[in-house]
Image (cartoon, rainbow, N blue to C red; front, top):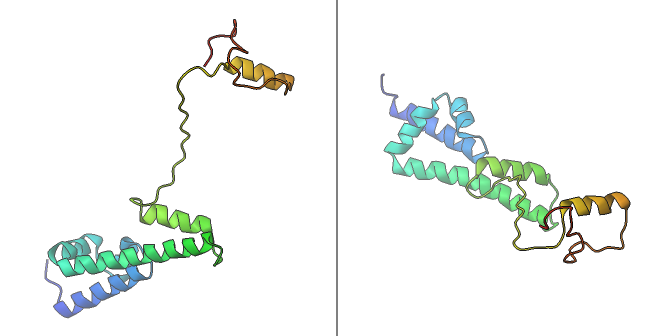
Length: 144
């Protein structure tokens, strides 16, 4: 494959960096500059300064969004919080993660069975306090 003239290569690099600073993904920035992503990655691997410039461009956009989210959280700015979180979870997954998980851990006997709680709920009886040791220990099954 013929080498790209240095002047054209530098113009392409500048275009990719500008797109990255504007918030584009690497793929979109390379597409706009008409260079294949693997070529740009190879250039980054060969040139430490270019690699640092690209990383600064990517991180500066992430930091801008983080700053906007902070302003929104502090009530000093308007904006769409969900969109900011979505952006950060996708662009900075090492620092931002969307986790849909419930962790339910306990140890020991709390004196309540699931069957007993369900019966109490079905009766609508608010006189008993769940969690009082022994209140539902019976043939309902073992206490949790």
